[in-house]
Length: 117
Image (cartoon, rainbow, N blue to C red):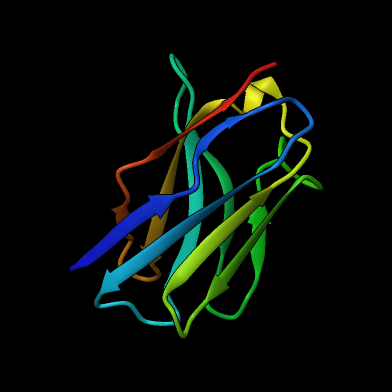
C-alpha cells in the first residue's frame, strides 16, 4: 500500500510562484512513476506533470515552460515548482504514483492552489 501526503498549496498572485511537495510512504520503488494532476471546479482531472523512475518528464501543454517537476528517490518525494502562475492554474492539485505494467494508481488527498490578484 502507498500513502501520499501533499503540502505547499495556497494563494498566489498572477505571475507568482508556489512549490508543491508530496511525500510517499509504504511500498514505493524507484521505478514507479510519480506525478501531479489537477482538477478545477466543473472540469475533469488533467495531467500537470509526471516523472519516471529514470527521470523522463512529461508536462501538460498548459504548463510547459512554467512548471518543473522533480523527484528524490532516496526520500520518496516528488515536487512541483510552479512559476508564472495564472488564474487558470487554480485547482486542486493531486499527487499521483503510478505502477507501470499494473495500471495501478495511488492518489493523495489533494491540495488547493488559488491564483488571484
